[in-house]
Length: 432
Ligand SMILES: *[C@@H]1O[C@H](CO)[C@@H](O)[C@H](O)[C@H]1NC(C)=O
Image 1 (cartoon, rainbow, N blue to C red):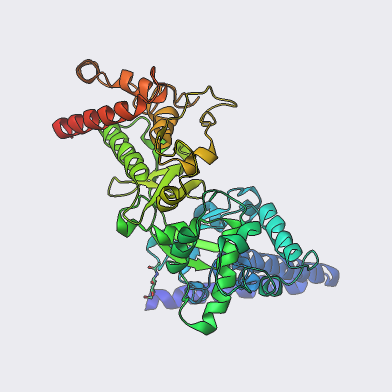
Image 2 (cartoon, rainbow, N blue to C red; image 1 turned 30 degrees about the vertical axis):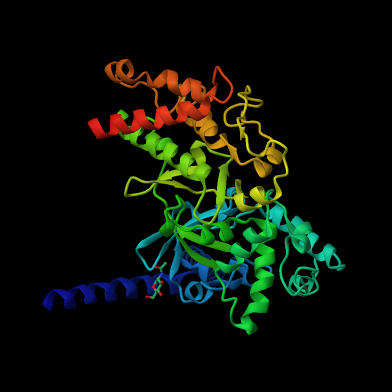
């Protein structure tokens, strides 16, 4: 108590002295001093405000003002309440301009790491918004909600692949009515409440035009065993998913047993995608690369970028039997890389859409990740480089992976992939 008193007394004396000195200064100097003090305080306050303000409670930052030209509204209340806070570099707005991927890291409820994805570059949004205006006969920079209200798919009794035709911008080249219906059934927003339903349809059309990822992630959820991140929902022009953990690239130098386990999981995913789901959809993972794969805290492989996954409706292929050889397997040919790592796999979309089976998934995983053909300049000799020599001698895994990427005989990849799966499993069972 005494101590505190004397501390206060000391402070009083200092202030008195300062004040006396200030009063003794010439008038103009007093004025200049006051002005500069005021300005600094103002600048300081605005910097602090800018630094500590939570952009994620700002409706314009979220793109809520653009709804229903947005992905959804489900999480908006939670955003405005302040449940989400940007973290790390994402929290510093100057970096917005270099954030080309438009991916932001944030924390929900002070504890859950999440990723906010805008799913398109700003220039792409401009192009799509303009296209939506034009398709409804409105001018550049039009009211997007009005444009969507006047759009053809919105005014049809049912959404059809035909009415949505001009709104496809990316992937989904093998669209079918059944797939479209399936995506609608699993869409985030409430499509049963008619009042909400009409706006939800606008948002569905818009999402479809920009990037199908929010639709795919809901229709094929991790809870059903799909290797995709958990999705929390969307608000405005942000999709919120779990932060899937560690990048695959960070495992390039991991212990070989860990890498064998990851390789096995990747081949299992390829197998699952190729064989298809019980709902008769199958998946071709065309852009398999280090950038799109994460390992979560349970050690499981998670694919984070879904826009280039081609979804096939096998029921449609069976029904239409378009290709004369629809029943034969489509085996991709090995091709050299055109412009460097990751850009080596050439395929016919037409064949993927019309033939019953294709070995694309095994090919891209062997070619872009596992075999020594995956010669990333920072990660040479592939993900399974430098296995212990006794393991290599016993299982000859290197040769199998080379053959998977570049088979010596046509259709051989189908046999090799089974051998690889078997060998990886054996090593796992023995050593992990
Ligand atoms: C955050 O907490 C709120 C309120 O308890 C809850 O409704 C919401 O689902 C939580 N958000 C996440 C991402 O877990």
